[in-house]
Length: 386
Image 1 (tube, rainbow, N blue to C red):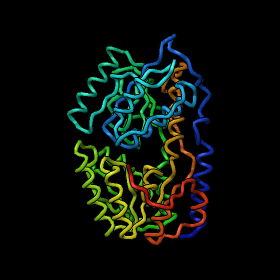
Image 2: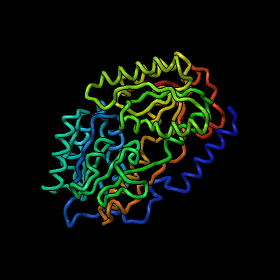
Image 3: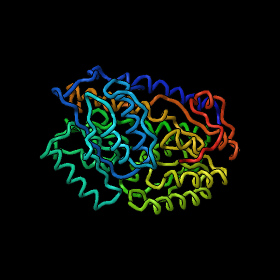
């Protein structure tokens, strides 16, 4: 691997982010100061496709962003068990102190990654938004929820968060326009391209292993179209392995990802660890051991948390801080009178890297000095998920 190649990629990443929205502070000048809804608190609801670790982290970061803006009194959010958001929502609805915002206690919905439950929850949520109209803002967490609420069956302002590719999934029309006045989805159209380019630059892989569910949503989560385009441009082969992701049986989803890793370590020379239902705190240690045992470099699509647990590298998300601040400002803009479609959906996280030196040593990978210099999160050990 030539160092100038890596340097070029990192410099391009830096200036691309500088020219767009590299931080929450770069958004357009709508007001974000705390204000009431005609003397009442703004009422917020929540809908997710099912439990997923990123959803909990994104929700926490968004609440912390609202605290930073002064909409909620600052206090430490309790540590959460597992990957669920139900307990977190219960705490938010009963314990936060705010003159401006209310997380409505009975407005937390989850489809539990079950198709039948999803149909019922979608119908219930849409009917509530259309008929009862007692919520001022809905958080649609993830692709399932985004698809279910991005329509004209209701008019409630809705923020679609943590969707891997809201454009490719059909949630919004484009990065510039959601296609609905009341819908806003955070969009980072070049995120996965940046990841693959950096991963290829530091490892020079020829055969990239990718485990994903072979469904419309699964291919969207894994950014397969982006990977295919880059494989032709850069010159590498994609080694696919199909898993089960959006299902209620988490153990089965985990088993399929683990099985794919066992296969990919024999057929690929690098693995791109994609976001999906089977990548959990329980399966990640197994996935890491499997890859490291076979000297296979890995790159996390999700971010630094998985690097902390032994994945070789990723683009750092700084514990979702920047995303949370972006979401918080978006909500604040809406509460101050902006329509969701008027607020920019474009957001690119700052170009920071995360690398695990313990994993690098195990697999015999010598990190380029430039990579270490571009990393703001460097882990010397492999931690175990809680």
